[in-house]
Length: 102
Ligand SMILES: [Zn+2]
Image 1 (tube, rainbow, N blue to C red):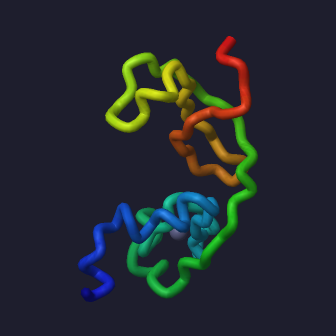
Image 2 (cartoon, rainbow, N blue to C red):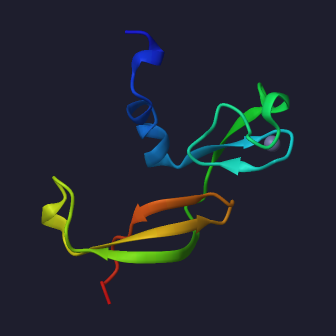
């Protein structure tokens, strides 16, 4: 199977777990998940996107408590999901763990 035939979602899983994004070598903007090119710099960024490990530190912008979970997540309800702005700039959606609901 050609690399490009693997669905993007699956190819990105190791990057998602290890929070590896990338940075435009032209404008220095950081992306997560990593992008093929920078939407600001477009063609000028091609070949200048460099891998960047993100710290995992950030602040919660907003959150919600999930009571009606999608399939395979029923055992975890209720659980909080949040939009987190990483210190490097990108925003991610993630489950909040090791934290009392209240
Ligand atoms: Zn750029």
